[in-house]
Length: 261
Image (cartoon, rainbow, N blue to C red; front, side, top):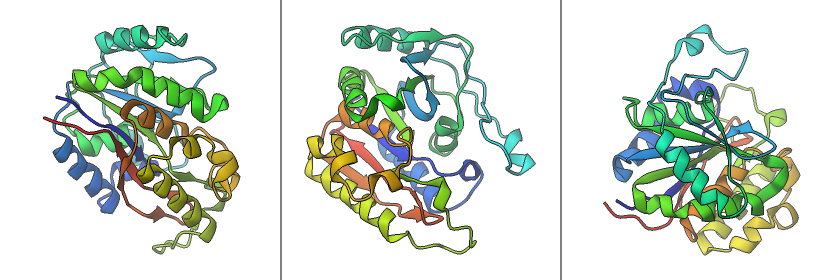
């Protein structure tokens, strides 16, 4: 099995228990993808100075958020770990001078378990999580992804999880189906056009070329997983157009690379 590399915008933690267009789309995507041999999650919510990877035999659920309903803290998603995949990732990244350290204790954060709870609800597929280094920017993560590309031929789903637009400071709390802010929509459509055209260098230079990038991403941790998926799968991309939540959370996803069962 050869799988695409995938980027998903994981939205708010409450999507773990929501029944809406976003969670339905994730479930449907998993049906199309089929069952991978293992999953490598690259989440915005594990940001480290140097690359690191989980090696636990089972990943505990990390509730890395505060202020949400109590029921959300009772949700568990605890898949088997993937130590063999972690060793393979180390091997691939050593080749570009980025061999990750191992973390035998860390579980899976909500950037991983929120979408995976809908995609593979039985939590029976081995998972390893690889950290990001947001201060090193887009090209660093593109090269990480390119080094990981052989995993796709080995039945591994490389899953980047973040947000295509992510500005928590300008959320629309009206409680209605908020339309995206114009600046957020402009950035979202620029990213989509470049991804679908395979304009990799423009995407890497998004901080200079895209409309209002610092407003769309005041910090970069939620976009750098996109570049890991882009590097692993290559361009052009197929867009999963899911629109916006609360005006400034872009929810689009992307599949990079051809795949076959």
